[in-house]
Length: 180
Image (tube, rainbow, N blue to C red; front, side, top):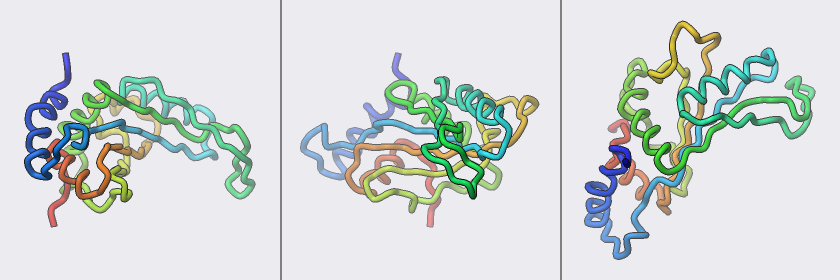
């Protein structure tokens, strides 16, 4: 069974975008390609910090996190080659729509004084990236079991070719953008 948000995309968003933008082909209409969730961890922290971050990320996304390692040594940052420095998860298809739905409906409204995300964080190619200050906004995380607060970066990759197309698409999908 497909997620609630995917059904909304098929029944509401596709016809609305086709009418608004005048697309002639169904394949021109923007869609979600993937969502990448990344947690960077300071190299100066103890070794279990990366493992804790990976465990939290796996709990949030429902997928096992891949550990990112440094490519080269940098003495000023006390960083050695192949030292674990973060973790990431790439979500596609059903897991992506489920995560997007939980992000929009449950997690983002739990941010203190939340008035929407800035519509100026597009990269010029229709992809939207933003940061979350702490992992405790997700309902899957138990507050008692958090050892340290950890932020994360979330990138929503769309098939839109311009930022204005992606903005229209994400607004129709229910993404909370701040109004001017």
